[in-house]
Amino acid sequence: MPSDLLLTLLDTAMRGVILALLALLAAVLWRDAPRVSLARIGIALALGMCVQVIGSMPMFELHVPRVWQAPWVAVSVGNAVLFWLFVRALFDDAFRLSPRHVAIWAVAGCLGGLNCAFARGDSVLSLAALGVQRVVPLVFAVLALVAAASQWRADLVEQRRRVRGVIVVTGVVYSLAQLSLRLASPDGRLSELAGLMDMAVMLLVVAVVAWHMLRLGSSDLLPASEAVPAAPPVWPIAAAPVEPLIAPVQARTQEPPDPADESLAAALRHAMEHEHVYRTENLTVASLAERLSVPEYRLRRLINQQLGHRNFSAFVNGYRLDEVRAALRDPAKRDLPILTLALEAGFQSIGPFNRAFKAATGTTPTEFRQLNMADSGIGQPNLAS
Image (cartoon, rainbow, N blue to C red):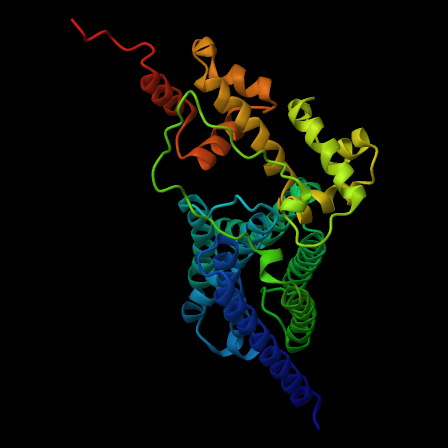
């Protein structure tokens, strides 16, 4: 069998397997969580990679006019942005897809499509645009690594942490491998051998990611909901007692409680509710575990499996938000700046505090204070006369 024909058959077979795996991943994500940002981005990335697999075929690049290749190239370049967004959503349950993210993806895609359709010759403009296009995968691979590193330690779902590591490492490896192959070609097109190498790396990456994601339950990988409160709640000053964030272990599990976990839960509850350790600057799972004199993995397991929290930052911020809400309902503190209350509760800056507060209550801190002050009659004019 001629070597060229063998390369073509191997290339076609690998592309077919990749397309099947990507379609399977997209179907699983759609089945499990069609309205969750992570699933939507994952589906878009899987379908975008299907387009990339077909559009990067050497025969396609060689014989299809460049103007008709432009949409395929646009989607392929945009995949780098989708990978970054996928990693962000994967590491942060509170991540929400916004028009700004869609705009970034569109700009990257348009750059690739316009370069493919209209860039000609060795003009300075064409070379500069092509250089920017080739740097895009590297830039967003680095951004994906930064997003992963910044949230890794806060993740409390142990299986999901391992899967995230696999996805980030393999994704970055493929981005760098593809960039190297494209840079090694004078015109940016892949030869049959280079295309085969590209598909071999992609097949390895997709197979590894599919294996891990399909073994992992959707409840571990995906957040349960992204529901937003239908209407802003009004919090009365004399609020009824609420269930503490750390409920007794036996209330959350059907199995007999482990005495060691019971003891750790009691110590954690005391540290959070009485010692107010959540006010500590840059509090981490490791530093809290050291304070409680327990291994970090035990504290992770307790907060996740026994107390039902998926992210350490969200767990800690729950206490901080409760303190701020109580302060905003307190008439004695009505003149204190909201920033002061947020910093005293442990937030490091106003931006993250405002986002967390709005997500938890459906109102801004200022609106929350005004609503509760109005309910109490404080600061309202006397209309009895």
